[in-house]
Length: 182
Image (tube, rainbow, N blue to C red; front, side):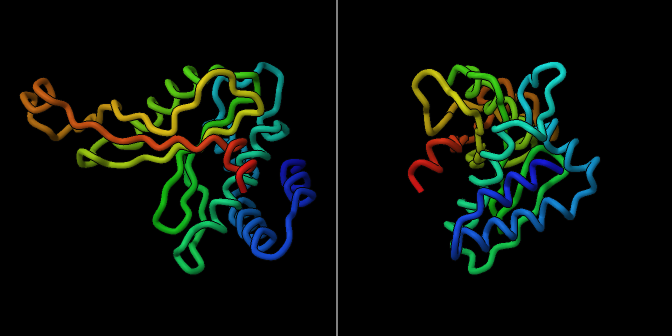
């Protein structure tokens, strides 16, 4: 897969190299079909005829995941790509968004809120969802938090949902900003 080759070429040194090797090992545990499905589920409106696996956003996301792995303070956290468009680093789950085209920050935030809403379904109020947004170009102001994401709880009494539906806090990590700061 060209994505893995490009990822190998971006290798850092020391801890960064070890983290990138761990991310690669987790990714290659997936079959090619599972990896492609994961990438497609992570993508926001992919362009027709374009491969998500060959995009800059996918590579940027993998490098950011490796950087977040280095920052994790769980000793040696386990990393895994989940069936949906997420990845876990130790006990931390990241929903991943890939957007190849130049994107408005408002569009990214709307999609991040939608993904977080699905991820938080059935969770208690106050749940924190982290969304990693990888897009080569993001136009507009970038918020680090979204505080107004409703959680859908199918087991909650109807009166509770109408009066005051529970909310989740969404933390946004823009891969480009994170990598620039690292």
